[in-house]
Each structure stands twice: as structure tokens, then as C-alpha cells.
Length: 174
Image (cartoon, rainbow, N blue to C red; front, top):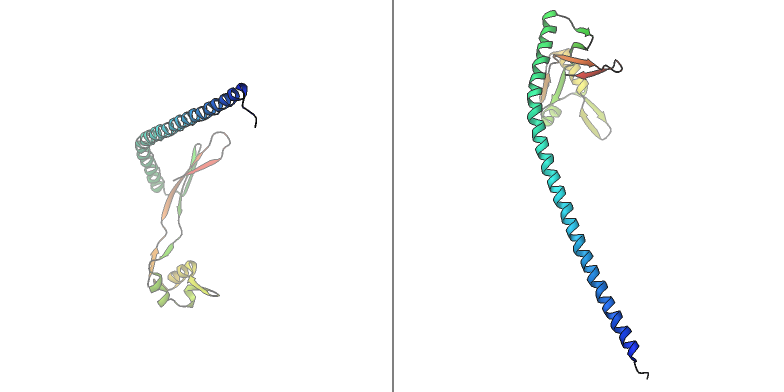
């Protein structure tokens, strides 16, 4: 057996200290990574809070503007109704009054399916479902509303299309 000489012992001691320093360095890096992660989470929380504050501010500012916008739309619709015109094309926009189509909604599918005849449903192999177009036609033809169905008569609706300045396109508004 070889005896360990002084240099070998010194080298082993240095390597041991080096290993300990490396582990201490790794632990220090882990601590720094933890600090950075906590700062990132804090920044995220702060940004979320700022976003909430901005959203609250936006809602309060736009609420007033939406009320004013709604009043303007109502005035425009009233003018259209008074004039009796269906479309008015102006330099900054187009105002229209259009009758929307009648609609039907199935309020109770079970009741409807029990009472519906062939003329009110569409049969797809392995599947039977209500045909809303056929139901509307049936109501118009017979003046009767099938059980389980809600009839919603189409009403006139005001539309405003604001013209964009850059390319003369229109932007639909209600």
C-alpha cells in the first residue's frame, strides 16, 4: 500500500473545499432564483391590480358615453320614423329602418314534439327535430301557434352605418 503523501492530502482537502464551495454557490443561485421568482409574481400581482383599476376606470368613463350614444341613436330613429323614410344616406353615415324577420322559439320541446305533425318537423334518419322555418310558415298559413312554441313577431329595427373617412367604407352601428 502506498502512503498518502502530503501533496495528496492537500489535494484531497482542496477538492473537498471546492466541492463544498460549489454546493454553497449552487445554494446561493437557488436563493437568487427564488428571489427573482417572487419578484416576478409580485410584478404579476401588481399588473393585475393595475389592470383591474384601469378596467374599472374604463367602465365608468364608457358608461356615460354609452348613455349619450344611446340618446343620439334614439333621436336619429325618431327622426327617421317622423320622416317616414326607410333609408337616409348622409355624408357621414346611412340611417336605415328595416323590418326584421319573424322568429319562433321552442319553449317546451317535449310539449311541442307531442303535438307537432309532420309538417312542423324535419326527420333525419335516427333523429327528429323541430324545423323553425316550417313552424313560421305554418303559423303564417294557419294563424295558430303550436303548443310549446313562442312566436316573436319581427319588428322594425333602426340601423346606423357610420362612414369611415379613409376609404368610404361603412361601419355598422346599432
